[in-house]
Amino acid sequence: MPLLMLDLDNTLVDRDAAFRDATAAFLAEHALPESDIAWVMSVDASGYTPRQVVAQAMAERYGASLPASAIRILLDSGAADRVVLPEAIRGALGKAVADGWTCAIVTNGPTAQQETKIRNSGLDKLVHGWAISEEVGQKKPAPEIFRAAAAAVGASLHGAWVVGDSPQADIAGANGLNLRSIWVSSGRPWTETSYRPTLVADDAASGINFITSMPR
Image (cartoon, rainbow, N blue to C red):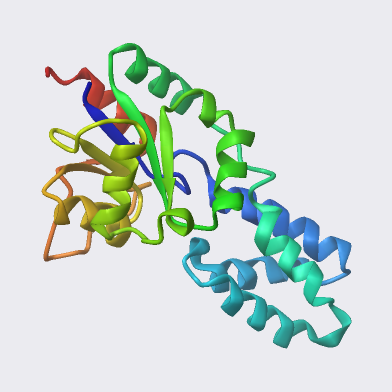
């Protein structure tokens, strides 16, 4: 069966929306300015800033009045408890599996946090397996994590596709293995000059549906 490898955060689930909601609740709980949502989101950079760096920045901004444990709770589990799988993506994945595709999630991040997102969103019932960077010991775009994802579902990388929103992690990773890819642009322009995705889709559901509609 052909292999479809899918990024998790901001591809299958809107991680930024979940983290924004968690941040808003955190600021309200600790009587901090609501306007600081934009600052926290900027520091977080869609989860690409290391958590210890975000924690340090927040500790410096808010001082000793804010317990370090509260910051850790926000960064470790806030977004994971709030992610929602869009129905369009649920439907696209269901169709992909019904059409004979093997689906695997390939995601960077802490194992416990990412597995919580996968299970809370119901993705664990839709995909065949996953590879998480902390558990694998390699982060995208390293080829090892893509190979680990293929191994986890007993599939070959031959003929595989990669779908993701990150040029550096997802599309560069696919390019390094000579795999076909779809970049989930969310309306952004492509700016990399040394490599390109095979195709561009505005959202993950459209990308998945396009791949699965192609003749094999």
